[in-house]
Every structure is written in C-alpha cells, then in structure tokens.
Length: 394
Ligand SMILES: [Zn+2]
Image (cartoon, rainbow, N blue to C red; front, top):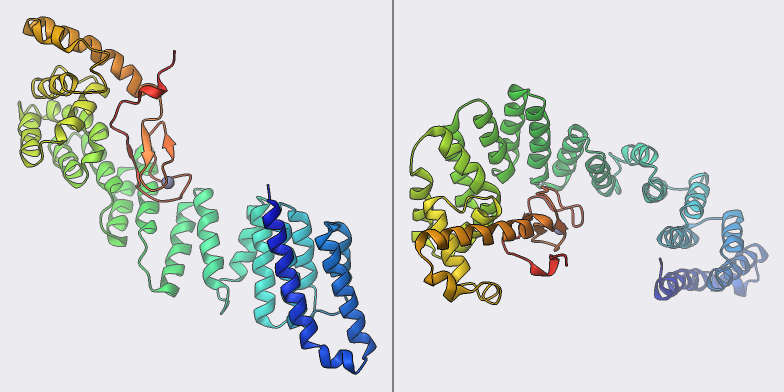
C-alpha cells in the first residue's frame, strides 16, 4: 500500500513539472494568449485534483487535455507513474495509452510511453502484453536496455530459459558485460534434461554453461549427479570433493552424497582421509562436518562420530540440555548409544524448519534453491548448518 509520503512525493513531482511549465510560459501569459493560459488553467486544476485525491476527475482532465508538449509530457509520465505506484494500474494504462495516441510525439517520447505502458502491464501481471511491447523496444536507442532487462525478468519468472538466454545475451552485447545469469539458465536446462533422462542434452547445456562464465557450483553438482547415475562413481567422488573445496558451506548438502558415492566406489576410508585433510587445513570445519553428519544420519561413521561427539560435548547451547558429565562417565558403547539418541532428536529439529538461508538477503527456505525468490540472486542460498532451537514446536 502506498504511504502518505509516497503520495506527497508524487504530488510534489507533479507540482515541480507544472511550475517548470508555468515559468516556461510566463511571457505567453504576459501577452495574454488565451489558448496557452487556458491550458495552464486546466493544468493547475488537474494538479489540484491530484492533490485532493480526486483521481478520477484528475485522470479525465489530463486525458482530455488538448495539447501535450515537452513540459506537459513529463507531468503525464509523473501522473502515470503515480497511479502505477499506488496500484491503480488501470488508470496508469489509460494515461499511457492516451499519450501513445498522440500523433506529435517524437520517437524518444513514443518509446518512453511504450516502456511505461509495458511496465503497467507488467505491474498488472499481463506478461504477454508486457513482453510484446518490451520486444518492440529491443532496438530503441533510448529504451532497449531497460526493455531487455524487463524481458529477462519476465522469462525468468516464466522459467522460459531459452528465451532468457537470448534476451540476456542481447542485453550483454549492448552493455559489454558478461553476466553469470546465462550460465545459470543453462544449468536450469541441464537439470531439466537430466531429470528427463536426456543426458546428452544435459551435457551440452553444461558445456554451454561453462562457456558462459566461470563454473557454477550447480553445474558441478549436476555433473556429479549424471556421473553417479551413469555408474561413474569415481568421477562423482572427485566432483563432490571439488564442491566442498570450493565452498565448505555446502557440507550439509554434499557430505551425504559424497559418503554414498565413496561407498559405491568401495574405496574404504576415502571419505575419512579426505575429511582429515580438510580438518588439517582448518579445524573449525569439524563443526560443519558434525552438523552435516547429524542432519543426514551419518553420526555412526568413525571419523564423523568423533566430530559429532566433540561437537555435542563442547557445545554451550546444548550444555543445559545434555548432561555432559554423565555422558563422559559412560562406557564408550553406552556413550555412543546415548549420543545416537540425542542426534535423532537434533535431526528432527534440523529437518523440521527452514534449513537454508540466502547469504545476500536473509530469505529462508526449506530446500536448496539456486535462484533466490526474494533478491533474485543466483547461488546465494546455503544450508544454515546450525541448530535453531527457536523453531522447536512445543
Ligand atoms: Zn536473496
């Protein structure tokens, strides 16, 4: 909902445009030219209606206004923008359609009006109409870039990745950028093809993703999944290790996959040797390993068990809930059994709430998303990797 200040700001915008218009015509007023001063009177009456929130009357007055020139045009745009911001999209559309019907607009003004009308349609959720108008502006000298940017946004929302790739490439060719989005769109297509069982097409999309930008984490994850599905578990192990080396914050996601691929390969102790190397470089990773082991039910594996035990016995948050001294006094077998039971409770806690969060905007999700629905960033959502007791239900 628009706030009072939004309304006032928009009103001031309109007034500023009108004052400019009035000053530009002061000599005309002095010459007492009736046609000009009558437009001025209409204008001031229209502004008064806007400020008094008599928007229907103001809209009629502006739409019926006989003349639109450089100065009054800005006021029309300001009024259309005001209506759209207030959610009165029908009114905004009327203002912009009325402008487009004027025969004396320059190409720049016509393109601006087309863009505004397309934005109205977008705001109203009329994507097909918005897409059509934004497409008309692809080669505009003034509006091509914002139009292409909006087209990319529409295709992303519609998950039409082929069109998103084409529009994004066109936008990049105008701005000179090499954006990472194209790689992510290819990853979307690759994942779709993989799920359809079309591995050749999935590989081709992954190759295209690699050409578009530096490798995406998701691209590597899809490669590992394809390798596993085709029985090349050794390659899957290599790729999962690459992922963990690139970003340890993916531990909760990757550890169970790596453990499963290692088991398939039958190379006993491989995962332990790898994790020991990681711990040797940075001991704080034990905490991530412990969380991932508990969340995925792997707390009984030897090295993981040690990490979990150390995590539980040294965790200040858990200390009031766990009788640490009692646990320490138990025989090794009884202690493992107790820890296993505690891990069962913690696992339910870890899997019951939002386990993922966007590192860019803080958006919470229950599963790993590659495109943040809130801030629209790619690959910014990560597992939380911490137990959140506030989410426990009574
Ligand atoms: Zn976000």
